[in-house]
Amino acid sequence: MSNQQDKLATQIVSVGREKKYSQGIINPPVYRASTVVFDTMDDMRFAIKNKTNGEMFYGRRGTPTHFSFQQAISELEGGAGTALYPSGAGAISAALLSFLKSGDHLLMVDSAYEPTRDLCNKLLAGFGIETTYYDPLIGEGIKDLIQPNTKVLFLESPGSITMEIQDVPTLSRIAHEHDVVVMLDNTWASPINSRPFEMGVDISIQAATKYIVGHSDVMMGTATANEAHWEQLRENSYIMGQTTSPDDVYLAARGLRTLGVRMAQHDKNALKVANWLASRPEVDHLRHPAFETCPGHEFYQRDFSGGNGLFSFVLKQGNLASVTAFVENMRHFKMGFSWGGYESLILGVFGIDRLRTATTWDTSKPLIRLHIGLEDPDDLIADLTEAFERFNAVIDK
Ligand SMILES: *Cc1c(COP(=O)(O)O)cnc(C)c1O
Image (cartoon, rainbow, N blue to C red; front, side, top):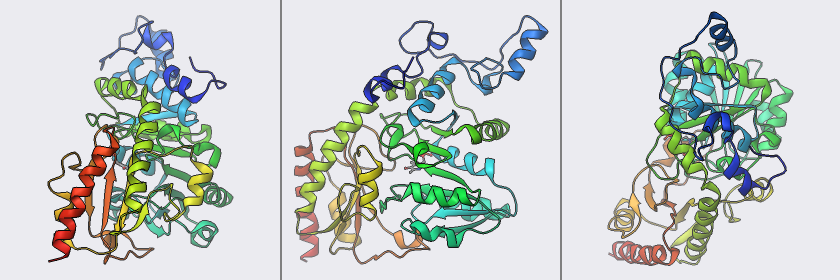
């Protein structure tokens, strides 16, 4: 049982561990279920009606494994209720589809995760839902983009790849003046490094696949809503048949218990590597929220209580050949998508300009994204030192 007075590290350990879910076992066990049986008509009617009180009704509505994890995420994010989804992308699409209908208008941040943009441009457009992309740093200017049919303002902060940090309280305030629902992809902060609901967000979304799971072995998404939006999110997600395996939820809940110490170590390691990168002559600037060169850095300082292992850096020059020489043949960094696991990852990212329509991106300077894992950062710096040697050998040719 968590207590609002408890410090965060204590809350991470205790949230969602009520005896009704765990039967006293430390980790609430895996309950696999489709059918749930009832003794009486009264019992059945009670279960049908009690949709959000952790009552068993049918597997799709969840089991104590799910209820425990949902409660844990709700308490950490600071919302009224949490729905679970088979991936982060599933959480984003279900949240948007739960609040948008044909003829509505959506304001989407230009630095959104690529599949979020695809959802807007391909699926939502086909449903007659219009999207306008906006500059992540628009601030007060968002009011000029709100139309009478604008229903949702979607934020992602920091933005994907380019890492712009948004002024969430200002954007939320203006949206609410126009009855617009505010959704935030809060994956980078995780449920512990920002207070989305205190900043006016109505629905906070996590790709739990990343730091909550933390071990690169489960896909999962969460969407947490405040009291005013919980029922609509819950009901519509249920109607869309969104469900998650209790085995996966068990792993996500297990990962959650070490989120605090992992995040702190990722943050510390990443800052060491980022500071070293900032001193390299080949580096133009860091896109790490803790650095002044990251657009919106002041909002990071104001609104976040810590960072993690994910950031990007921009090189002064380079092309496909030199960046390929950099990222291939690393000892510790592996090439691959996603992030938030215990291991380091590297990506040379090309074509960012194609993913930006409200802002521009200078493609003459290549960008490399790093996820700094839990290895010793000195070994990662040695790996990157060799990468710069390979890079310079190609540049000098
Ligand atoms: C990875 C990611 C997602 C999607 O999560 P999946 O579980 O991979 O579907 C959504 N938003 C952000 C910011 C992400 O990094």
